[in-house]
Amino acid sequence: VAGFSTGSAMAVPLEVRGELVGGLSVANRRGDGDLFDQRHLAFLTALGDDAAAALRNARMLEAERRARDLHALLDFSHQVAGTFELDRIHLSIVNLGGEAIPYERCVLGVWREEHIEVAAISGEESVDRRAVAVKELEEFLAWIAERGEDLRVPNVGDADDETALRLRERFGDYLERNGLQGVLSLEIRDAEGRLGVLLFEFAEPYAFTEWH
Image 1 (cartoon, helix red, strand yellow):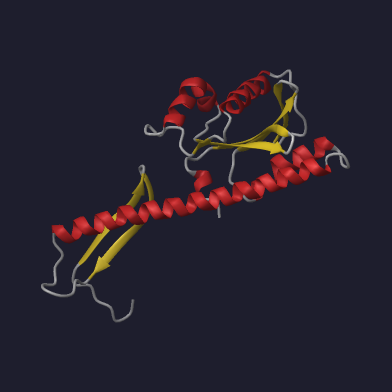
Image 2 (cartoon, helix red, strand yellow):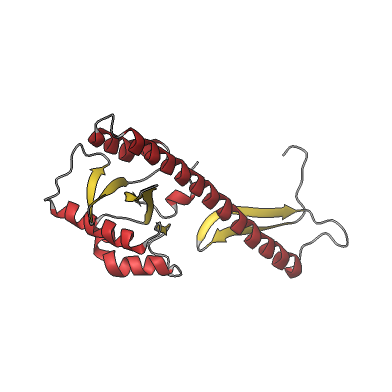
């Protein structure tokens, strides 16, 4: 900044679970003395921890808002399914979201009686349910559905995340083979009950905590 000179300064990184989300700095101490000491650094570090947590919470709130928007889209698609070709609606669901969400792949699974089937995969015109990869996907979707809640794993390698640990134990080969670093699932329901699962797979960790 023109006309500004720095006599003393401190800076700390803003980190949450090893993820760098920003930085915090102060310059030119006022009052008694003109230099910062360890007490000031400790206070700035504590302030940085609070600021980092607030930034991450804000990102998560935005992600949840996006998730609600997707639920609304899915509700709409179910209502119009009787009028339009269902397969085309399924393809639209898994492909159009890529303009707003930086996912590697999106998969839609729908309930057929007592089991879940892959109905659409982003980037693919059709689904060959006899293929080994599709059967593997259906096994993954069934495991997610049995949990009874949305799956949110921003970083599959997070040692402090119990859900990430269970995911690696059960589907470690699948995650590694597909190069996945993050996983998000949304349960699809209507007034009559569950309809299916929408699965997002991410090649970068924390990708769905940074939707803009």
